Amino acid sequence: MNTSNADAGFAPAASADNAFNLSALRNEFPILTQRIHGSVPLVYLDNAATTQRPISVINATTDYLLHSHSNVHRGGHALATEATRLFELTRSRIQAFINAPYSEEIIYTRGTTEAVNLVASAWGDDNVKSGDEIIVSEMDHHAVIVPMQMLCQRKGATLRVLPVLDNGTLDLDALTELINNKTKLIAVNHVSNTLGTINDVKTICALARHRGITTFIDGAQAVAHLKVDVQDIDCDFYAFSAHKLYGPTGVGALYGRAEIMSAMSPYQGGGSMIASVSFEGTTYNDLPYRFEAGTQNIEGAVGLGAALEWFIGLDHNAIAKYEQTLLQRATEGLSAIKGLRIIGNAPDKIGIVSFVVDGIHASDIGVLCDEQGVALRIGHHCTMPLMKRFGVGSTARASTGVYTTLSEIDALIKSVGKAVRMLS
Amino acid sequence: MTSTDTIRKLVDEFAAIPDWEDRYAHIIALGRALPEYPEEHRMDKYKVSGCQSQVWLFAGEQGRAEAGAQGTVDGGTHGHKDDGSEVIHFEADSDAAIVKGLIAILMKIYNDRTPQEILGVSPDFIQQLGLDQHLTVNRTNGLASMMKQIHLYAIAYGRIDEERKRARELHRQ
Image 1 (cartoon, chains in turn orange, yellow):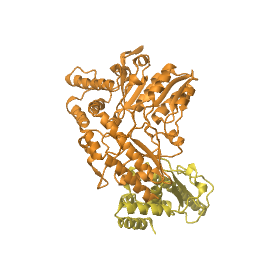
Image 2 (cartoon, rainbow over the protein chains, first blue to last red):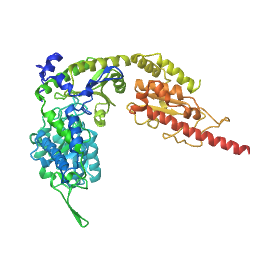
Image 3 (tube, rainbow over the protein chains, first blue to last red):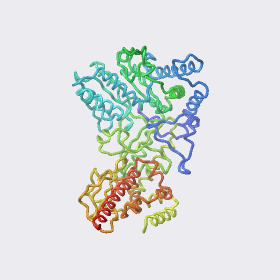
Image 4 (tube, each protein chain N blue to C red):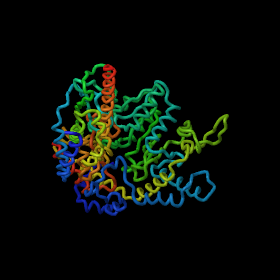
């Protein structure tokens, strides 16, 4: 991503807003217009945890429930046919969205976490043996670290850690030293949920490909901020969740290269994932159904389909440019507060700012910002090893969405400044 | 002052501060006035789990046995008093200023009271003080865990007191 913001500068909110009609876009999110704690306007800056849903996504889910709800794939009736059409339409949209070669390579999951667990179990059990090594990064989410750690424990394999540099970027020089003949898998996030760092996953995957190592990219924080092309990245697996992409919670997708997934053992057994069942033995269904045991989150898939349709229709050049303006304003404004330190200063970042203030606990900042209407995330952000790396117990994190305005960033800076004054 | 009187006083105190900034300034000031936590008790076994910030809670005094982390009591080391209903003395601390202030409020209500008094406090005070958000909904700050822990200590010490009473009665017979 181009991070040069010199041209965006500190453009007044109005002119930058007009670039993609921000106020019209905000009108699609009724939840954002409310006042909280009685009277203060909500400033929602917890988008890295979950984004809000536009009215079109909410309506699509409601319409589905009102008119089309049925179980998919099996029913020989009109509702089942329509539900199946919508369910498979979303699969095709996901395929197009991340530029996967085949729709069969898209597996529905409950979210990124389940996708990691699926790969760690199904692929891991087939391909990892005692003495092998798996590489994760120091900035990975617990959702990546823990399933891989569990896989290593099951198999007697070793978990190796790709370190993070002081500025919050991955130490790619260390990666070449970490990789050896025992390395079976590299699992890293595309974008750090704590630091906002955009990782050079293309380079990582090229290194891995060259050595015959399988790659898993956690795209949870990337899909709503970057153009994702799994063929360009050249990864073997890529996962994301709908709820960080203006869609519903409890649904997400795993992309897996067909030649790898068609050789993988099933993850869970159940209905839909079989070809035929007898007590003598069971044969399994083809991709993608082999990995979709039981009834899926169908209305979730419909909501995700609507979210993708809505999201693809946005002016992403303007949004990306504005996001960098927001990031720059937040970085400069917060840095000016005495004792405040931003954790993660990578040159390529999405709209995430994690910070600590000398002598003040992040939870106190969170409480006092919330009283002023500003919704931040406080804690270790499911990245405890990363907290340890930076010598902090927790941080406060502000994260932007496509509806975030410059005046909201100003409200953030003002509220943090006030919190720090009250706590000093 | 009974816990009921203390709660009434606190409710009046907070009702007189309508502005949220002043209310938090008051909470923070209460925390700063909390007696210093003994460093020898700053141990993991006295940490209250489930907290975004670190919270320590220690219960005991010279006449009391030290209660374990889950409200069980190490037997045998406690002294005896004749009335059979001793007060529990708590020490508590947090590394977050607002949590520490909320702890100070809990200490005013619960500290140096008998197990019966502690268990008899109605949780209505949380709402009366406008602390719902901190003590019930947002469990991550550990205060709900801390209240639970205070109750567990009260239950454990209450049982010890009953055992002692029974032992004394047996002795008299």
